[in-house]
Length: 280
Image 1 (cartoon, rainbow, N blue to C red):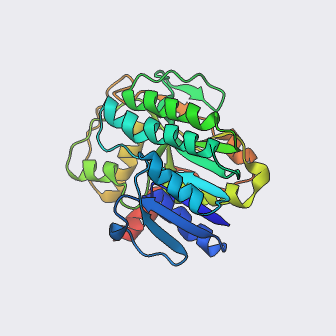
Image 2 (cartoon, rainbow, N blue to C red):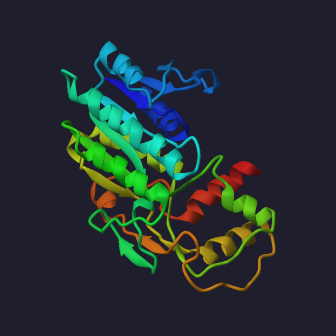
């Protein structure tokens, strides 16, 4: 199968390695392909997801069985989020409406579309009322994908972590940590890539929406305290009440587990232990 990866960043690259190993041909699309690592079975093309003519050339030149969309904003502002998320999805919608074949669309979104602040449980059926500009634009982009005339799956990922995504470790090492009594959620980058492969390989599992998070929502202060212990660093014992700037919610991954998919890293300790081991 030909698979198009629009936005060829870390997750797309990890998924591409798995998909090419399964015998698929992956076309990775980004603005600067020369900066990307070489992966056997991956063809890199320079194009702009925000340019409809570029998307037309890509989707008309060959038939794709699946299209993976992983977008990032060029700047962290309301307009940057609109240009990074909404505009490419609107262009993609226009182009797909004119195709004479029906690709399967996988769109990577975020649990930032939820606005819950007080430790509520959320799942695929929970109301989405984001307060942030990023969350609002992500939700608009999701709706464009959901309205496509082809089969699509939206993946709402909680905080993605792993190799190169070591913000918490750096904060600890720089002694720049405020402990908070708020719930946090995460998913390892390898599990995101593995689930993308899973739904490509198993068409019967292609539900319209999945919440991708591990099995164990955890208080923020507990994560930092555990990491500090592993790194043999001192961290304050004072814990501030309240949700903090990122809110507080607990992600329920029951639908993910019901699909038959098995997480490689079911909790943060598993994922971070692997990271700490690799860094030694």
